[in-house]
Picture 1: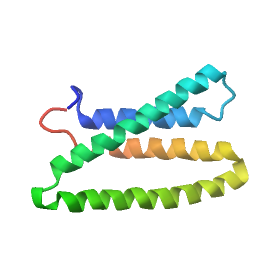
Picture 2: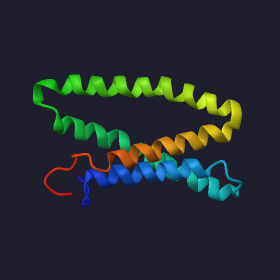
Picture 3: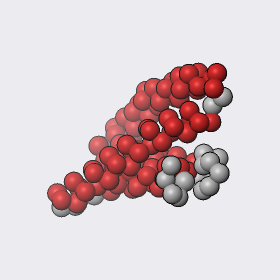
Picture 4: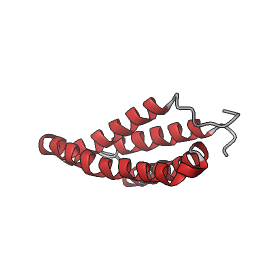
Length: 123
């Protein structure tokens, strides 16, 4: 577990990914866009194993499979609903609207998760 706690790492990485994605439509030099893409990938990549370990630790031993399945259902639902909603924005704002919506959604998710009890004894 990270020295600063899972919640802080999850919220920080999600905020970093959201900010990086929201800045991508801005007219920036190529090297800056590459750095933003790396930051977004790193921020998004931290969340998956972190939430899996948190869920495995939090779920009762006999219900871990069910908890993992519910997490997967939530992920798949988001993969259907969010792109559809982003498509509505893209109709009016173009591709930049999708990136802005994604960045805003990640920021909202990080803000919402700031008080989750996902840290063990230390936070």
